Length: 253
Ligand SMILES: [Zn+2]
Ligand SMILES: [Zn+2]
Image (cartoon, rainbow, N blue to C red; front, side, top):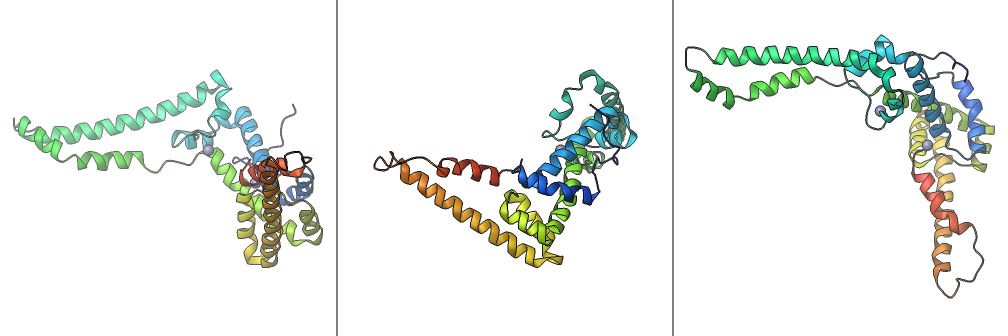
């Protein structure tokens, strides 16, 4: 496997033109172009994580202040002991933070244990646990978002912009009409993106996918009709895969 082209730290390819050129290809392969772009961007990100990011300061800071979410964590698990440097750093940062928290809590506790009235002040300490809450909140802070989620969000924005521009062109319009493949979530996001500069694209997408859903409903009707024993002998057709088409449309890849 060749070394991937160098990306910025977020791993997002920002050359919209190269993405626009790929939209037709994704449509021909019956893929949602935005899902496909996000998947590609994440693949690049994790390839670079393995080669370089896992030990680069920005990634280390982000991981120490937040970490990967449970959806993306499995993408790095296969690296095994190669993650030692990364997690060594995270351990040190968290240990320091916890030591700071301990210091502060001890200081507060000791302040209340004065004048030999320990029992009375222990009672006060417990009754004012709001102090602990305040310290904990300050130390927890606002966790950094998962770097892969951030990559996804940036890739989605780039892809939705490129998709809206593609649909505004005559060729793009024609190609999409022949193969409307955006998934539901990315259909809505493309409409959101297009609504300012290209309201006609929003109308086009709404019409296009309304027709798609009507056709799907007809297929479902046909599927259930053929479940009836009176028509069960009729040849099976497109209606047998209606669930699959609906499933793919309503599920982000
Ligand atoms: Zn999608
Ligand atoms: Zn994530």
